Image 1 (cartoon, rainbow, N blue to C red):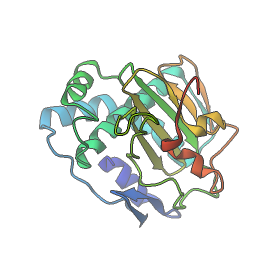
Image 2: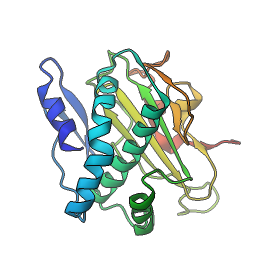
Image 3: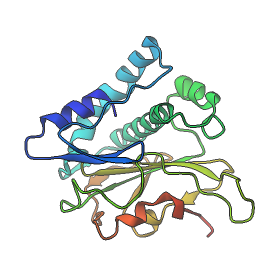
Image 4: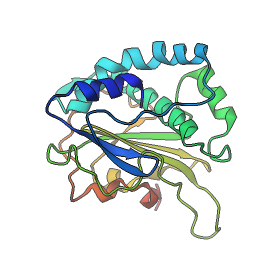
Length: 226
């Protein structure tokens, strides 16, 4: 996670931040630090100015579950921040280039937006679920789904981020099909990328609980026609 997220977590007096780091659950005042490799000073400064600094005041109310309405421009920025964070996390996890090729990082550096084959979703954790180790597998970076007919054929790269009361899901389709998370079918997360050009009321009416958190498992994502 970016340092400012870790610092924000450490500053919360009454809350413990929990999550997953390389498949291992953690709990405490400060998420563990991971150093992303292969990012130069220029690119790091670009990410801070384009994503971290403008996204911080938008993300903090989402993380806290504060009720408010985000304008469409803020929703778009959150989608781009999520994409950036997933790509950086993939570097930490040494994700194979077959799943996220170098060309995708170069494209993102030039365009600054998620790929046209990306779908990004967000949802809110119920207050009772915040701070719990939800049964959704290692976060972020759940394994991509495999096709039923061809063993070893990756259909999408997927990742889930859980930060405070914010849950975000990232699906990068390899074949162009839209793979819909089970959580979206259940109304627990909503798509914010491709751009919706709509304001978003937060938190949404349906929230993620300990009981339904299993629907965040992206291995259950299915094609739109499925």
